[in-house]
Image (cartoon, rainbow, N blue to C red; front, side, top):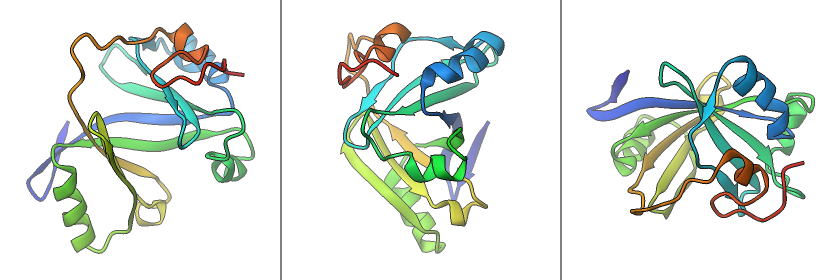
Length: 170
């Protein structure tokens, strides 16, 4: 379903779920609910987390996330969820991130985490206090390189995904 933000194209892409270990999430989101890993995923070494996505028969997607060893990225989130994790954020794609930022800022919304460093994925977040406790990620995906390989689920969990740190998931 495509929505509009003052003329910008906005489409829901996925829900992200975080836990101390992605392997704790797989029995539910893959085995019970039938999610399929279509390849891809990896590590954000700077922020300190690992991700992969599962897709479902209707085209819906769930992103699974875990902290990398020694990371404090999810500490406050896990504190709020008593260590169990849960829904971390909702992701919406926009066709023009700069225009989305300008429009939301003009409306008085607090944004944070603006990141334009990677042409493949530019993002900003709408603070949960602005969205009734929900962290909303607005992202502008960029082009993929021709022949870009997509790691297997096993490779991602072994730390060999995109930007992998080589350390297996716990």
